[in-house]
Figure 1: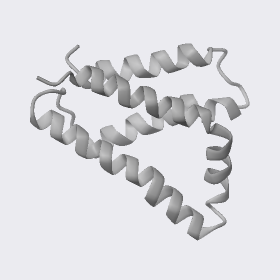
Figure 2: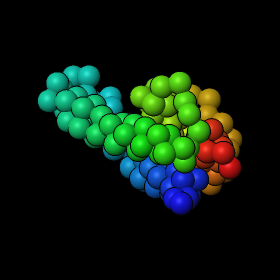
Figure 3: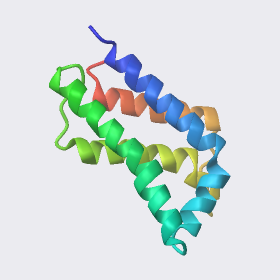
Figure 4: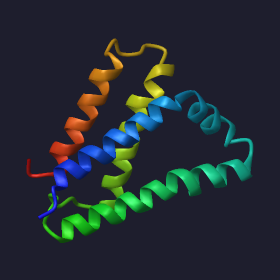
Length: 121
C-alpha cells in the first residue's frame, strides 16, 4: 500500500520550497507575462500548466485507487493546491499588509491543510 499522505506531504513541501526560493523570479515572470505573449505561453502553459496537469493526473490516480479522499473535481483541487501554495510561498511577501507569520509556520500550515484535505489521515 502506498503512503499517499506521505506522498502528498512530500509533493506540497517540495512545491512550497521551490516557489519560496524563487519568489522574486516568479513575481517578475508573472507580472511580465502580461506584456510578452511568448513568456506567458512558456509560464502559464508550460511551467504552471505542466504542474497542474501532472498533479491533476496524480490526484485522479490516487483517488481512483482509494488512496486519497474523493474531491468534486480533480482539476479544481489541483488548482486550489497550487494557488494556495503560491499565495503563501510567493505573493504574501508582496502584499501591502502581509501576515506576520514566519515562513516556516506558513509552510507547515499549507502542507498540513493540503494533506488533511486530500487524505484520510
